[in-house]
Length: 401
Image 1 (cartoon, rainbow, N blue to C red):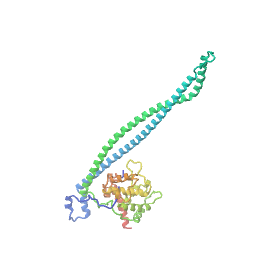
Image 2: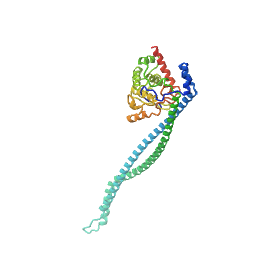
Image 3: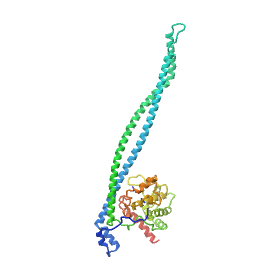
Image 4: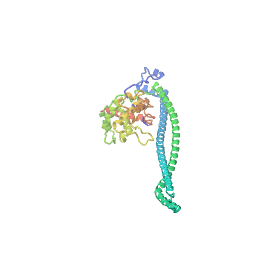
């Protein structure tokens, strides 16, 4: 998963080469390139760089596991909410059916009493001794009337009782599923806490490795820093691009439209926009594949079906620039940004977006383009060399422009 953002600042932790290297190189008549070669070949530098990449890769892996568990957690919470809503609806239906059943039973009982009363013999004023026959006829007559009237009522009562029994069974099943989901949620919460502890540990180890690498000169601020001013103009970048034979597929947008946005958005946050453009060329194959205004692979991963969607080209470029800044500057903060954190990358909620930007776990891990790759932005170990190679082509073209 790609990961932020602002200002042309020097890294506060960029201090010294190890004392032994300093003694070797100070006052040396070796050319700068040869001196750099000695630094790069020093076993301590090599080991520091190896340790740093391993620590950062471990942190990225731990964070990916944490994100996967968080997605499971959110899915279970959604299912619990749905189950609770279903339980509430079933409870409401059960109560309604029970009320209907009680009303129907009262109605049937009342009818039975009425039949009994209506079938009782009245006083025979003539003394004809016909009470038994009258009673029988009366009962039959009123029984026929009641039967006709109560047929629908009894049918409704039977249906209501059947529905009530089914509803009770549904309620029990839904409650059982709800309890299971809650048990799963408890397990996921414990897993999240455990994985968060692992992430914290891995990030601490990666930051410690980063400081060790800086201390012995493994990271070179002069090695194409991410933070800095644009050095190429829009016309130089477009001129180079048109010589490469790329086939952009940008809908109603053109590369000529995009270049000024790259330069402006990057300048607003103190990031090198011409380098960001070179990165976009690599990520999109010369803008041949840039769906949903996503020019830097944001949200894409080795197993992802699609990347993040951005409504406009500027939104896609702004998110890219802000993420570059966060990778480059350990001191970057949302409050220092020229533009608010991208709602399409960090969060639609402004407060959460600011928090996500400020607490980005890989903040300051890649002050130069040389540190990109190995999990920083992309997993490809050769990612940084490819981006730098494209930028170098652009500069070479501009020199003869």
